[in-house]
Length: 142
Length: 387
Ligand SMILES: [Zn+2]
Image 1 (cartoon, protein in one colour):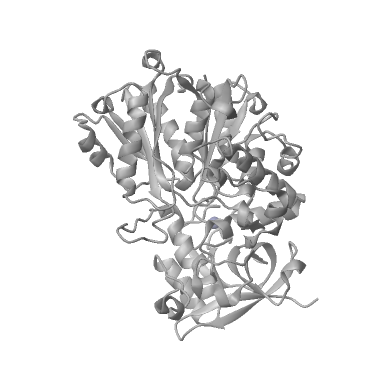
Image 2 (cartoon, chains in turn cyan, blue; image 1 turned 90 degrees about the vertical axis):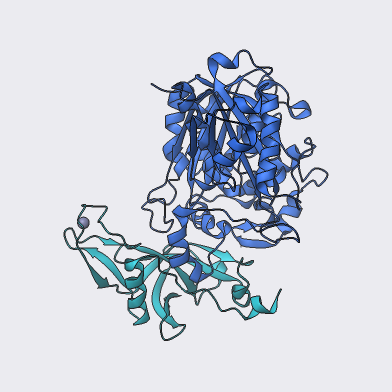
């Protein structure tokens, strides 16, 4: 492993368009916001130009409750990116927010063998830099 | 009008499959293509159509190498690992309409060397536009980069919903490895795999262990197709395309947001292809199923309609998918134990089986076989072939 590889920081979100930029700029303010259709009020993620449900091109950003459930996951032991080696094993989770949208994140505060579908989870932010904060999730205490 | 029985595979060819090639994937594809064209009894300049997966050579460059002055049809299919099987649909469509007469499909890459470049080997990358945005903006910051991780979201959801056992995943890995012992081309020939070895191997990303994951390979292979009428005059027994289709999960560009994560591309494609072919899934004599990971084989067995949702694990038990069983799987060893050639090697193996040229791994009286492709975030494709 080269010195350069060891020292390189973890990758940060690399927005591909204006909507991705807006999603991550809300996150930088530690607010998890999703698009909500202005016509039929359907929440959506990934951000998109049109509502797949009703076809409307009008939307607003709304902040999520940050409460949700575990939809699925993988426990990674051998990451392709060496920057994640210190974290193994880590849980890359698909989280379903109470508003109905799903997103990829990390799940913390639970042993991998205790994972179950619909495990309750709560949002927390991890600040990476002034410009970047990542939404993370923690298993809710029962 | 469908392309049922209107096109046939008439030539197949390969380079050696290795870990550490000394040439570019473009050079390997030209070599494999020449072998496939010779196998079809054609001259290179008689190729007038090219259908490409997203490989590192252009149709124009192939045409210039082969003296193809009138390239009548050139297309690229963008479905990741599902591309090669899907190119057969595109080729069969063009042939059945007389747009081209002899179509070449090449596939090659440096799946081993391009990951860990060796001196003298240029780095090559693969273009995957459908996955790019979700990856770089929403997955990679969480250390989710590899297909083993992303497909595991689908696998975990399925496993927890239906209670699939690790032994069922092992059955897929072991069946492929056993078949590789009968294939001189297979990278895993001479390296048998036991259930203990499987279970004791390290985790990659749960629920996938080491032997759930396919090989990394340098190499190329190619197939040549022509119309059913012309195929009768070729040196080998033609292998006809009875049916074929592609399918894309919804939405295809993000796994996490799918209303039903367990409905994969092949779930959409398979009923269409079997309807075109006019047969039932259980009528096939062998299965060449895209096996980038063991678990996606179980998902595809269900999507093909060979069993009900959730019964893929039970389907593969008791030697049913081994040679001599009811549904022999990946008789060449598959991506898991022959080599990773994006499943075009599955098409070639199906062709050899239906020609009756599969040697000691020949499926007795093989008349019909199915080949599937899986790629990107779960795109699917299949062809149903007959002798
Ligand atoms: Zn709407």
